[in-house]
Length: 92
Image (cartoon, rainbow, N blue to C red):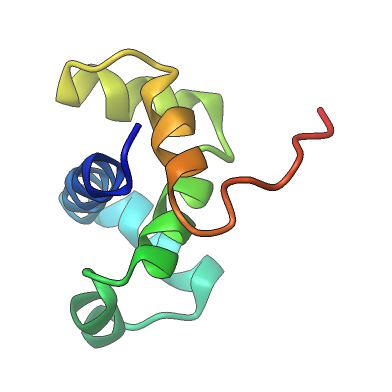
C-alpha cells in the first residue's frame, strides 16, 4: 500500500472515530490531544499513524471501524505499515 492511500484510510478512520463521542473521548484521553490538536494534526502522517495504532488496540474497535467503512479487517494494519513507524517489527 502506498503512503497516500494509507493516509486516506487513516483520515477516514479518524472521521469514524470522531463520529463516536464516547470512543473519541477515550482517544482524546489516551493521547492527551485536544479537539484543536486533532484538527491541526489531521494531515500529519505521524498523527494518522497514531490514530490507526489507537483503533487497532481493540479488536472490537477494528471490527466496528472496518464494518462501518466496508473494508477488510486487515486493511487498517496494512495502512499502518505504510505510515511512519510502520516498518517496526511486530513481536506478537
